[in-house]
Length: 216
Image (cartoon, rainbow, N blue to C red):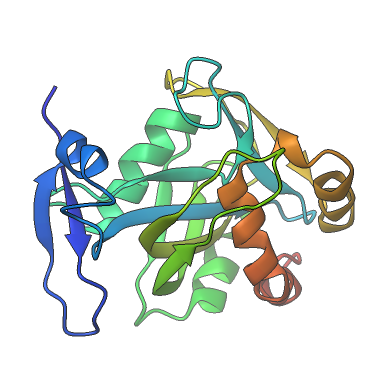
């Protein structure tokens, strides 16, 4: 099945370009070496400070049966990141999500809809940035070297979850303290991308939790 994804050349003025997903990954380190593929990544957190991580399916080519972010996917051609986020959260977790617009105060939206966070995920766009994943030199890791442009979001959601998509096997919840411990004790249970994310984002996730994951 044909699927076009969005890529950027890494500059602030870069205009999006669409290419076939299979073609991009076949020539990622040659023809498209200077390009960053556009992704959405979402961390869902409960009101009791538990981070939801999705377990990738056993049949996945990359990082099978490892824990990753709550929701992840490529931004497809002619799709806004908000729509990619919506359909992927429904397909992968059966969770409808509402991305609160940047002009709307997230705290006030959360206060108004707090009692409905068991029905819909209330999501805040955190940042849109270029990221390079350096190669891991530890022989226990599969080498990875990738360039992404990430549309990163945090959100609040309280149950229920169902994994409907073939790309997902299951999910697990962790509080931050336990997650830090598990990442050190059992690093191979988590994707290399998740390790990279969390190395960068601990403080930002904690700030989001402190500001919003309390009963209003």
